[in-house]
Length: 350
Ligand SMILES: Nc1nc2c(ncn2[C@@H]2O[C@H](COP(=O)(O)OP(=O)(O)OP(=O)(O)O)[C@@H](O)[C@H]2O)c(=O)[nH]1
Ligand SMILES: [Mg+2]
Ligand SMILES: [Zn+2]
Image (cartoon, rainbow, N blue to C red; front, side, top):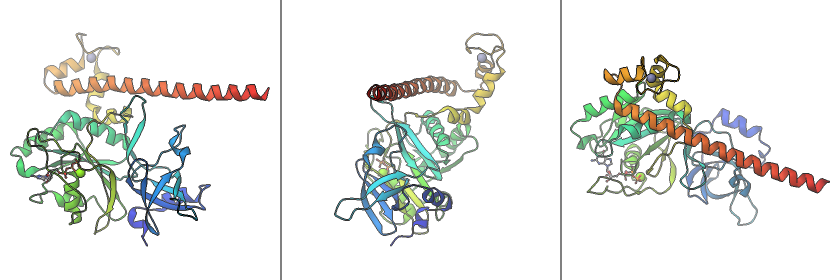
């Protein structure tokens, strides 16, 4: 028997459950996402489950992801239980899935804190961090930055202050799984009933950190490549585990790229300084090139805005337009399909 409150079950989720038309069925949380199948924790323990085909069709349906609370149907025979419904999410960390079709991929659902991880070696990259921060602010979870492998870095303080400049108002820690530095600071966020997720490139030490926190070899880890310090994509699926002192941890596979799915609010949060500057330009349609009274050019010249940060903002603005365009296209296509279905229906009526 499992106590679901340990896995984060709470009053607000209960309220969703009780108003669901499926409430006669059972309840569980997705603790592992294998793609075509999911592992659930339920009051009766763990079980594998399939997904009702309806949930995989798009059309506003929510496809279950790691961390989701779901309602599932049990069968009398040996058939695997089937997920019928995903309860409304408190938070979701999303990215655009790779592929021709533009689709949202939820990496972590119902997470309270997202640890954005980079290692203090070759993996360290402020522009990538800005991208993760945008997605994190969009998610609704609290972002915390964790810089790993402090034991093999000799300019940790410089890097911490660089991160501070791009992530004002966000907690930033350096940690080491070797010396134990900073582990208590990470632990302080993980309290009973709360869920935290570890996100970042392959090889930064996500699984190693979870193992250190749990005090046992919960997850497999593997050395990074010697030539470029990149990871080997050791973790292959998203997985939730309980820590001995309470709290739920979600380990995730290293992301090669984080293509933004939604970004508008996140960009405003991460680049508030630039958005303020842009408002100060003399002309409201300033292109920030050679116009007189351009506050951006002035800030670049006096060094209060770094060239690289500005370039990243420009790049992300373009990306945002691109995502919006594609998403609008998708919405248009769905509407077309819908209208076609209606007219077919109408034809058959007359
Ligand atoms: N020196 C040092 N090595 C570390 C530290 N944390 C992790 N490592 C090593 O980094 C390598 C990669 O660690 P993993 O925990 O497998 O990395 P991961 O982020 O889970 O990688 P993926 O599962 O591929 O996404 C392993 O060899 C770890 O021993 C640290 O704090 N210091
Ligand atoms: Mg891993
Ligand atoms: Zn300007």
